[in-house]
Length: 399
Ligand SMILES: C[S@@+](CC[C@H](N)C(=O)[O-])C[C@H]1O[C@@H](n2cnc3c(N)ncnc32)[C@H](O)[C@@H]1O
Image 1 (cartoon, protein in one colour):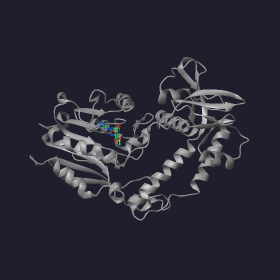
Image 2: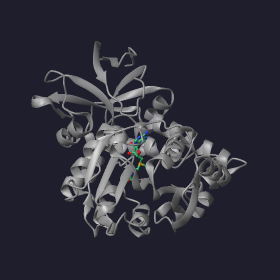
Image 3: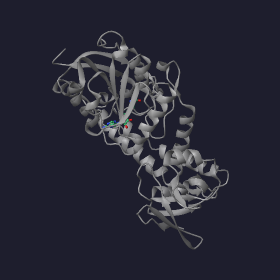
Image 4: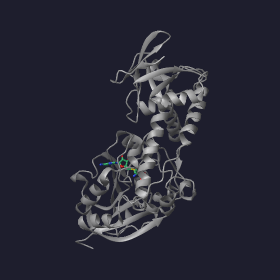
């Protein structure tokens, strides 16, 4: 039976002749579905696929594992139609993103109920459902609804929340920290691809004011998990100010830096790019902005997509006035945007020069992630050519 979403953060549906409503939850900001039908293990995957493609969300009432199987079956059906190749890498990239966004929309139509449990916790009231209390509390905060209050969430999102909880629990080993682990929170950029972190461990430190790296001051702009601030602290930098705008990133960085024993050296502060004047100037300013100039379509994409290169340009424009005379800005940037025709190298060089900066050197790393070597992966040619670099930038007036 199909119902109609109310469009104000609640969803309504008809079930056994009765009208039901529930709250709507979507981390990616997806709107509540307009039509909801109840489904269980008896529904054939082809019928389910037809319904979700037509815009009817399916509220699962069967066995939790059955829902997982159906999601996998829907995924196989979406993937039968691979993204089209464009005439240029740029066009292929846009077609690829369109296909990903359609995939996310279609797979996001399989919904499961999430119920408020005592103590603001959460449960999934389905047979054989996993424990989701801790994972959901980490991602969503404690539930504010009364016990038994129902929200609907896509199974795909819930799986992401559960996966993020596992990553946070286990942590990611970081070679540059002698294998110590960094624990990413849900929605905070994870250093799983560690090659960029090695660059920060390898780059030569600028001369310390009067001997000893303990006198060096650094800023880490957009600190995420705090991993680069931790590497700088491990290298003996005496004082690091790490900034971010995201509340989750700030909490995550603080927790990691405490765990890594670097909390005495690193100050984590909320700031739009640079810390305020009280932090003074820095000998090293490191920044790893999102590397593709395009609009993110979800919170999770914000670490990858930087609309109009806003963060990159903001970092470059403010750098000279935040550096000591012999200081260096360390910009970490993949050149994937160049290979995709999204941002030519000359444009980047123009912004660097326009910000009163010169390039003192570049350290490069080849990606270690699987997609670079998998010829079947979308956008293979661009990904195979991708290099991540640490650009060492100095003030033009003192270089
Ligand atoms: C690609 S992630 C890098 C995180 C971390 N530095 C690392 O290398 O793993 C970019 C980070 O910049 C943060 N960010 C985005 N815009 C920002 C801004 N205007 N000011 C401060 N941080 C920002 C994001 O929240 C995110 O944590």
